[in-house]
Length: 415
Ligand SMILES: [Zn+2]
Image (cartoon, rainbow, N blue to C red):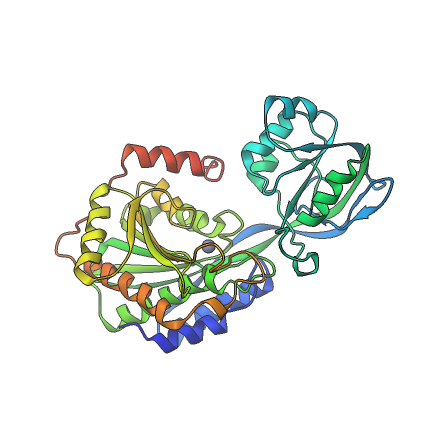
C-alpha cells in the first residue's frame, strides 16, 4: 500500500525551486535517483540539452522614469544603447491592434501565447513587454519572475522582450509614454536537464506501462503541489510494484523541464523510439495533495477508458471526475504517438491552492489527501498492469488526435 509518511517525507525533501536545467533541478534528480538505488535497483539519468543564458542587461525606460523588468530568456538582444520606439498597449490581438503594432514596443496582457506572439510579429512590432502578478497583492509581495521566449516562438521570429509586474504594467499604461527604450543583453548557450528513469521488469516485456510525473518547478516556487506531489506518488508506486511483482513491465519517468514546454517527456519519447510500439498505456500525475480540492482523471485516449475509471471509482467509493480531453502535461507526447494516456490530479480551486509562485507551499496540503489520490492511482494501475488481457485498445479517437496535434504542433516538429 502507499506509505503516507515516507511519501510526505520525500515531498519535504524535494521542496525547493527546481527550474529545468538548473543545479537545483539536478539536485532533485539525484535525490530521486538515490531513493531508487537504495532499493538495489538501477536509476538512469537521461540527459538532454536545454537553452540557458547569462543576462547582462535588462531595462525599460521612458522619458520620466525607469521600470523594473527582467529580460526574456533567449530573446533577441537590442543594440547596446537600447531600442527606442513608440509605445503601444496591444490589449487584444484584433485586426485594429495588429495594425497599430507596426514599429512599436508593445505591452500585451499577461502570458505571451504563441497565437498572440504570431499576431504581434504579423503586425511588425519591434519589441514586447509582458507582466504577471495580481493587483490585489502588494507589489512587494509580488515576485518579478523571468520568462522565456521558447524556441517554437523564436523560430517564427525573434524580438527583444521584457517582463514586469502587473502593478508596473498598470502604471505604464497610465503614463502612456510616447516612446520607450528597451535594453536587453544576454549570452545564450546550452546546458543539460535530465529525466530520471527506472524500470521494474514484468513477466511480459512486450507490453509496457509508463508512469510519468514532472519533478521540475518554476522560479520562486517550491513546487511541492506542482509537481513534487506527482513525483512522490510515482515513487510510492515504484516501491509498491517493487514489492508486488507486476505482470507487465513498468517504466517510471520523472520528467525534467516540463514547465519549459514538456522538454523532458518530448525527449523521452523521441529518444526511446524502439520502446514506443510496446508502450500500451501512460499514466501521468500532475498536481495533488491540497486539503481543499477535487480529484480528476483526464483520459486522452479511448472513451472506454473513461468508463473504466468511472466504474472503478464507483466501486471503490472514490470521488473523482473522469473525462476525455487533453491535459497540458507530460502525457501529451505519448498521446501524440497514439498511446492512450490518463492524467490524474487533485486540483485546489481558486484561493485554495497555488501554482507557479511563492505560495506553492505545503501549508495548503496534507499527507492524507496525497495518499488518497496515490491509493486510487495505485488501484487503477495495478488492475491495468496485471490484467489477463490488456483492456485498453491502443487507439486514439479522432477528436483527441485533433486536439493533441493542435496542442503539440509547434513542440514536436522536428522528427
Ligand atoms: Zn505541473
